[in-house]
Image (cartoon, rainbow over all chains, first blue to last red; front, side):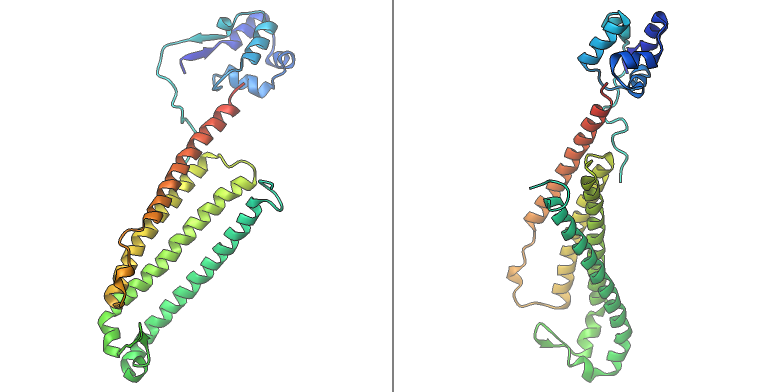
Length: 81
Length: 184
């Protein structure tokens, strides 16, 4: 996906674990893990707001754009019969 | 009225689907047994023309020679009727699978797209088989009122179109569901 999530880099800078961030933001570790590994399809503004507040950063520190082919919207959505 | 659970429309539909599925199985078993019995009876009828003379189709007594003149077509029609019921069973099986996901409260599963497509393909097969069976029966057992037979079943083809549209709706529903799951 052209949108890259740099959450792990920001976490290292802030010396914060994913579990601690999950506690502070109110999002499950599983969901933050999905976000961190770039598997998320979308991020709510409310989540982004909480992440930026707790990590004391800008949205651009967490997300960046890298030109490339877009993901197939049906990726994994159809397995057949 | 509730959507899911006891007393809901879904529960009534589930009962109807279960009954129809059981009835179709029974019909298929009876048809296969009847077909096998008819095949076994052919040599007997060949040697007993007076028995064959008691059979009649469309009010006309059928002689043994009549039966034997058309027997390949009759056998083919019988097989086609068996196949027709078989395809109906496949359709009902898939519809019940789709319905099971509804009763679980999660109908927009990606697998349902494939199931609905199979239902659509099954309906196409039924339409085509319907034409074949009717043509075979018209040839083997000429009926008097052939004017009542419509060459194209518009409502049947419309139903097929609706099923394929629904399959695409389910595909989009499955995609939206996946998006919602992966929205953080």
